[in-house]
Amino acid sequence: MPAPEVSAGLIAARLSAVGLTVRVNEHARHTSIEAEVPESFPAETWREVLEVVAGADRFGLVASSANGRTLWAAVHKAVPATGDVRGPGHQR
Image (cartoon, rainbow, N blue to C red):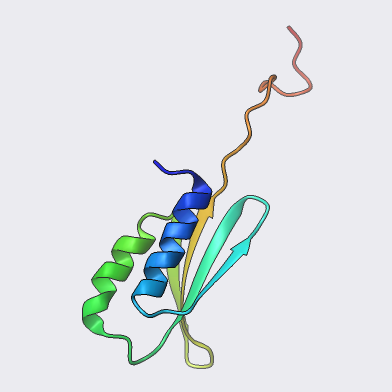
């Protein structure tokens, strides 16, 4: 499984390759990828788009008459390993 940064980059690149304009935003715990999906988007391309976003940790489609359709995906960032995973309240 590729690193989270690589996964997010691959998702963005593949969505761009099918003709979508992609926005990538870094957040503290995840990277979000968003793309506006035009009404004229080819129906036969949806299968490929779904295969692409299936590689994300979460994905969805927001549709409204006011803002159109926005496809989104989120890839969680790796949690850094620590020396003491039990927490500060636990003693040996």
